Length: 413
Ligand code: LLP
Image (cartoon, rainbow, N blue to C red):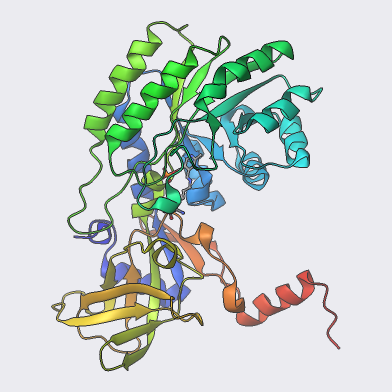
């Protein structure tokens, strides 16, 4: 059972594809809101707040939904900061986790008033030496990582992220000597966490190191809550996690002022299951050993399968009631043999013109899309009750090429 079956009806998606064309990302607003509320409810009554990791899906219409649900924004680039500021949030609700930030970006971040979360000693020194700086948060490398793939494990001790644990007392001394404050302590152990116990252990480590920081006002435990992509994937047991987390949090909170806050900042959790990528089969090809369904999308629109061997369920919407009796590999239209969206999937016998849904694509789909092969980006539609709203228009091939020519300053003769 894929998330798709619970959220969208095949007939509706077929109508939407007919109206807006393919390739097309479709998101369901109610699902996003339900995910928000489930998380808020699990921590109700606790001094816990949530930020939305903008990188998962940064369509401004989705950012607006998150804002309405009371989320601040977790951002990781100055561009995301600007986007957050322009969409709605006030700067104090924007958390900016820098990663190899430039001096210019630091300058701009300080001026914008967002909360800067610093991940290296050298950047911390330059921040404290800046005349405009007052306070910041720091990111700790807990030496505990997790994630659905080694490329998204950020908490292991060799990863590029975070300040080494043994340097935390030095951070505190540095702040004091510059008359500055470290008001926040952060970690993020990875994305699509497999073992929630790892996050709980890392939270313990973070709290242990919090003792070195006398000016703390909040602790941020990052994101990483997984969603089930594949039949047999256990859904994340939010209630069980919240129970373990509550104990860690409340043991610490007892020693804190009442205004002290704890944060989580998931991205995938909120939007992944709310989205599908609709694509049309334009080629059916039998290569002898492999039967391919060739589509009008590819790794330039959904990179996760190529980059992480990630699994996304695929449904043939044109024949969703027929038995899945034929083995297909779903290929994209990018000129790379690695452009495979799904391998050896049992689908009904399919034909050119069929409409496929690539499921659970609402997070890290569109935000990781590119113009590779100079292809156009997909359009996006937000479904809300009975209405379907176009939230990114489709650019034609001609417009895409014209944009490229004009951005590169090329003069056509
Ligand atoms: N906070 C920080 C500092 C992060 O770096 C990330 C994700 C998050 C929060 C949100 O993590 P989430 O709750 O979404 O797992 N492109 C990969 C995921 C990379 C995530 C990078 N950082 C994917 O498609 O699986």
